[in-house]
Image (cartoon, rainbow, N blue to C red; front, side):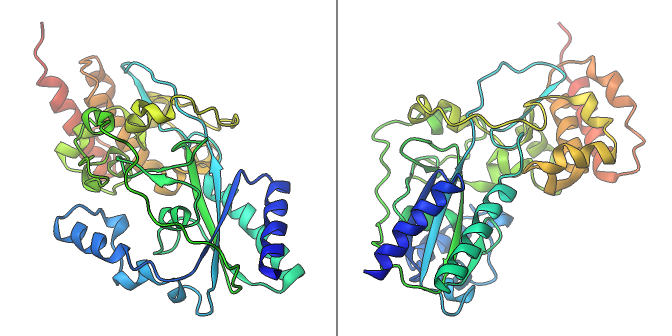
Amino acid sequence: MKAQVIKEDIIKFCDSIGVQAVGFTSALPFNELKEDYQYRQQQHLNCTFEVRDSVLDLMDPKRIMTDAKSFISILEPHQPYSQIKPTSGIGRMASGTASLDYHKILDGHLEKLQIFLQEKYDIHGVKLCDTTPLSDRAIAVRAGLGVLRRNNMFYHKTMGSYVNIASLLIDFDLEATDHDKEAIPCGTCQICKVTCPTKAIIGDGTINSNRCISYLTQKNETSEEESKMIGNMIYGCDICQLRCPVNNKVKNPFVEFIVDQEVDLVTLLNIDNATFKNTYGRTASGWRGKRTLQRNAIAAMGNSGDRGMIEILNKYEDDNRSIIKREVQRAITRLKNIEVK
């Protein structure tokens, strides 16, 4: 009975601090992730962000907290990105990346919940939000908050895939009912697979992360092929989410933007450190730093098909950052190779 009372108290508290959805699950090992992880390694489908020192780090919560008993999983929604036509000189920030960094929002929620549980029930917890080897999505699915669909993204029943996930791992048994992972609920729909420009979506619920535009915009270094694959994205990618019919009716609460979702590429190339820190630095893209976003802006220029961009790019040929200099050379070469009609 005590566990049920505490769960109800947690739900009320989460509602009071603005948490949109909360679920509970046990801290039993995620044994079901082992086979998938090993398969992805063998098939070279996992990107560097997915690699673990040991598969046990992915599976066992007790490697994070030795007396772990339960998870409290929470969701933070963001807004769908409206579809726009590619425009020369303009890049794009994916949905959820132009507003305040969701890590900061979720960390704030978890810290308040952490203090609440410790002071009222002497329950201790460890905050998890994209910062541990555990899978945030696997926790949320087991907690009954949503499902994984064909594009391998997590979907909530009303907020769609436009959510971010965080959890509090605690040393108290909430006697939660664990939910099994469901079969892909997409029927015969293949829209995400067909419309993915880089063919990263395999179609069986898995993706080749090394071909995902979202990952490519975050890589430290990209190849010529990868630079072309980025298209006009400055950070992240929304294509499979935008085309997914399940997301059509999603209307999440408005979130104030810190930077424009449509990015003027020249302005980004000329941004100073202080301005970057106070704008992009406060979003989820900020952790990758100015250089990576500027590299993506240059790649976007090279992918624009607009030979007029060459004159702009020429100004950055002597940049003292090797990655920027190399990207400028690639972009200029691609534009020069365009046939003049």
